[in-house]
Image 1 (cartoon, rainbow, N blue to C red):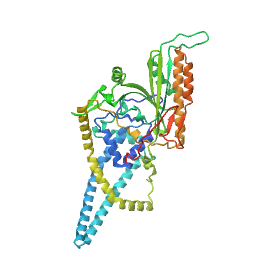
Image 2: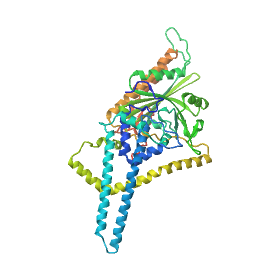
Image 3: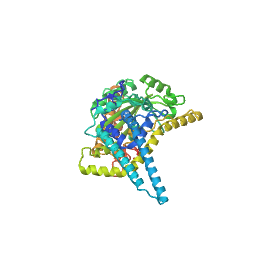
Image 4: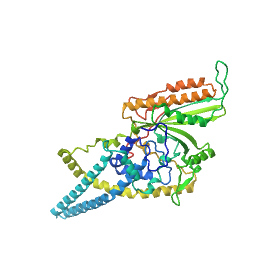
Length: 490
């Protein structure tokens, strides 16, 4: 499990980040095969995007999955080229046969040639399917190991794939539209309260002296003491968030003569300078990622503290990443060890009948892969035209991969109960830490105790009979929404 209080940072590029989110990583890697070429192209296009800021990935390191997608697509080129030749042979034989029939001279030779082409296509696609099943087996529960991921991270790959990946060194969240933390999943509620730090506590012998509070001390106390409470395994990091149209406040990386991309891997000092220069546009948050069920369930708490005059303010927003939707779990329904004659015959017949359609699909995939370069050029062209029209370009990141493939439902009832526990435990620990700090500084916390009581008793509210991320909210006035489309990655 994660070391409690682990900070999400490292200088070692080969380290596998989010290593305890093993289950989601396994399913995503299997999805490179089971979800097909469309999913692979989606990963590659996002990774090679030279304009938008890299999305903030939570509970998912996109590098091994992206590198695998690139290797598979490159490896498929020879297979798809041969499929083009088979398709042309199909078309040629059928055209010749139709021409002979129209002249009342049907040829048995053409029939045998057509059967031969069909047989070659069937054998070719069946061999490919067998190789693919063997590759998928690496990501089954019985065969998957962390060494598989490490080998993918160390494998040679096109350096263009790293352009759109922020990675574990990402310190900036450049968001699109309104919600900064959409990448963290479905919003499931928030709370906030204020404390009058100049209101002295009353004790039996009178009012104690007030000690000035420090935001840096409070943030450090929360970051260090809260994980030691032991109610969950957490990754903690500080992140600065800003809107995509305000990315002019950041250094812009140049990938060629025309494109610019916001740098999201600035060091702490550089991020602090940006926040200090643009306090209205850039805000810093502490993110607490509560990782459960091997990374299939990730509860993120975004904490922001403010102190102005005599008022201390703290806000906490909650977001939830649920397990990947069921189509990504195809690998767990595959019988790799079933070598019975019945299974082999059924697979042989099915793949033989489907071979013409598989050939046609692979021809399309060859063309679509060739269009990846065109898609990147189109992004650059659109960027150039937009910059020429107005300098306020929206550099906001597209949705994170982890967010895109999360399901709308819990997979297990106990995931909901674990979530309920994690929420209430976190809230109570944070509020108690604030209360203790204020008491130590002579601040009256009687009002804060009343507010804490309301927070403790705000549970998960579920609309309807099914527990879904769409219908789930936490606390009074909380709301939640999910825009998952299972067909988006088909």
